[in-house]
Picture (cartoon, rainbow, N blue to C red):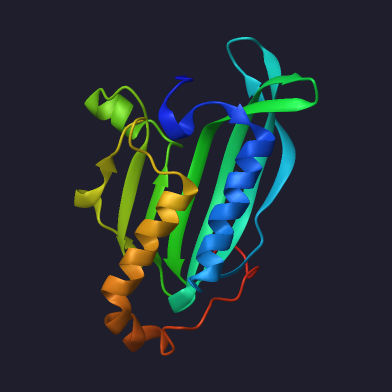
Length: 190
């Protein structure tokens, strides 16, 4: 795992959490995000190489956006060190998925499978899925490797989604009615 690249570099958890809250609040202030159920919780993963459990922090939950758009987040941050009451963390795996509630997925970024590593020899598994949200069908020809240096932060993901909303707002109105409306959170992972 790379450990020193820009916005994805190791960071103190307190700083990470502050940045996270600031970004979410900026989207709330602009009324693109209405509410969310995101929470940080302690977690562990088993490391096959060392045979040990690695402490993690999991960021998990939903974000309700304009246009009845729902973001689902599942992100795991490895705890690299825990000294002087200061956790140092770094994202190890993530999935950000945007969908129109009641219809289908819009797009998703994740690094959860090795499709591009195995089939195309890429060095990592960071990629983007695109969908026809009206019928919840993946556009396989638009499955794109983005790479470690280009995968988005959650804030960048929300920015891209907000631009999608404005670009598709008129068509979205034909399906969801009130394009200023927000989805209902907590209905489950449909």
